Image 1: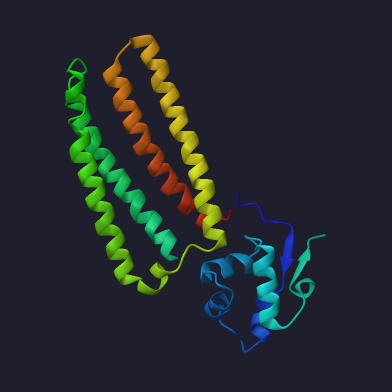
Image 2: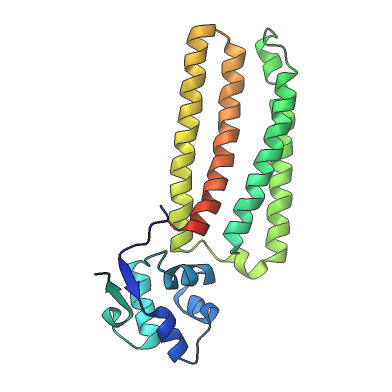
Length: 71
Length: 138
């Protein structure tokens, strides 16, 4: 509860490199709320595999380029 | 703040205020009153909580039309699910405590009021925990 999951991500970096794309635009593109994108970027929430693939596809990268395992 | 979080805040407030209303009505009923009299506070409570919930949800939907139409996303569903699970535990604790109290005191009216009160408390806890999980992560 409240503990950061062991998954890292480059979502903010990818978003800023693509436009920058707003959090709301990314949220709309993958079908979640802006608050969920904020939680992912802050490392407070690990998205489902489906959302991880959707995020990666939005930026045209592989899942492993957008997400990683801590440590 | 997301639509679901606003809704959870609003419903927690509704449950707290209507819960206090129920408490005020319930303490006015004597413990030795006939069983049907114990139902007295329940009718105005159900009307109050139904009316307040509808008003709050309609107001939230009107001011957040776009978000209100969208279903909860995966993170919100997890938060709602976890909050519901914890609210169930709260209800179980209150009901078991009330049953224990009945075994000792044999007061059925008090048992009835505690079970209804437990439902209100668990609903309040459920909405409060939704807010917590929305903010702190699931």
